[in-house]
Image (cartoon, rainbow, N blue to C red; front, side, top):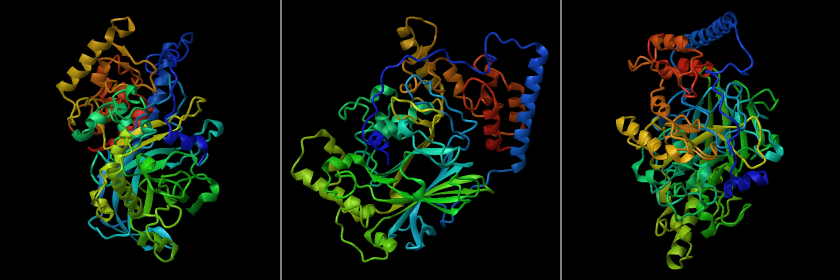
Length: 552
């Protein structure tokens, strides 16, 4: 893994204050350069062409029929957790919000389902990914994690500014973290050095508060949470994760890729299946300062080699990202075909979840007798006097997911991702975390505007977010860098324009009527501005077609 990328996960990127350059141009209310004037005939021609494209897109999507889920061949699907289809939206993280991105050329990762279960490979020494899952098993030697994404998605290339190549393996790269809480205890486990890249730090960018009351007070509602201080609220460091899957870009090279199905060009295409072996699966870095783990690139870090599979299903048009990893030392031995090794706390030989948790217990026992004096040890000490084997049932684990894409240009100031989806889902506009948008949320957003309105020296019913991109606000529902009454209205942008509890041809007709309209100016079109960027456009047409549930 390139040095900068490794540092990015271990050390907080320092964001320098930067003026947000220029005014945000809304494509629905301006036609390019202010000196360019369209006559009425030209305007009508362009509009009719655009509507023809919309109609063609929707006809194709409607002809496909109901969405077919590409469930992996892992047996019982009761281990699955659904995520809303077509809810991917761009969420910027770069200082100033000025880096270029193109969501038409580079599809945003859109998670539709998560599978997590005990897994039984047919022959682990041949391949880890052929086998059967059993969500109810508590005696398996492996677990399997599957992320099912809508459309074609591919492994991401390097996002190191010194060698920026995010699209080297395809146009639709996937980055992000899957955090696994194995003891269902939010006070044990977490990330100390770069928590701003995780779920708790970014969930509020998606226009609402998480629904889990137990950890709501740990969610970052703006960038002031990123203060590198474990003791201050919100404690975004304390996610409760014991392990995470990290897809950062740059973890592997072409020599690490095995094309199970492919044409050999190292561009991930439709119907292809790739497997890559690298350091994808890490134990919580918050344990490292107090750990007895030896071996590996960093003292105390449990980062064994693991294999990640990307497989695209043409019929369902979905990509499944899969990880299969040993729960036990017996499982680790099955991969190599060698004798089972003792729990030697070395991730560079036979590695397993059991061994990593055994070290967590051992380290916590030591801290309980000989405290370090560091407040951060609180992340680990709860593991004292436990039996690691009691936490090897994937059916008892909790999972959070944060996924995103890449900008089309790099920044010399650091590594920045374009986040697009989270799991568990956020209810848009639900700023109080009760899992619904209601008048209480409207009052909270309005109250925020009233309190903050004068801070920029102008009382105009809007709050401009300083350093937007790296900074954000829970109350900026559509993350455009401005909190206004539009954020209240934007909470209703769900594609169901007529509020009949399904998305059907009537909603398609509404989108056609509203195409090209500035939904901020004409609130009657807000229901079909699905990506809530202020204009009804082709992206909304694509999303609406994939969301259709009613008569077609």
